[in-house]
Image (cartoon, rainbow, N blue to C red; front, side, top):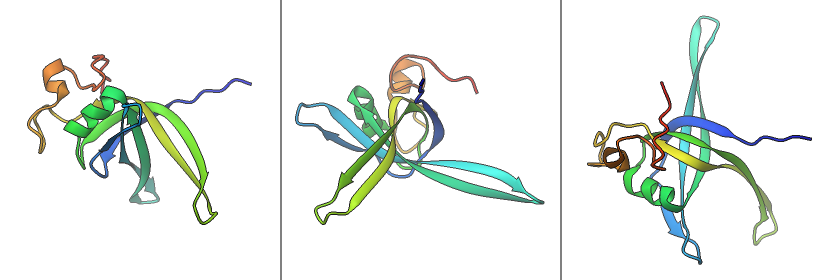
Length: 136
């Protein structure tokens, strides 16, 4: 059976990225993302929000921690990852998150609380430096 695991999300950070390092020295950052959906129900417009946990690794994690903050607009390309564990009290816990392969900063360079970002230096909007901007 074939399988495919790819996620594309555009939204705003719900909290500042939290940067930490593994025992081997790999950078990992995590943050929340709010993705809004507006739809019409009868004559009324309704809005729903989906909150997603995002994990980013390596240099992208360091860039996200340095240049993104709560409210920053981003485009995420990644994959779903399911985690399951048991707490110290024996309760089973589950979590579905997105592991980002690419984080593209959508805000204007220098247009927020931060003065600059990698997109200002690299001429694009991607923290990966690949320059693969999404045409909107």
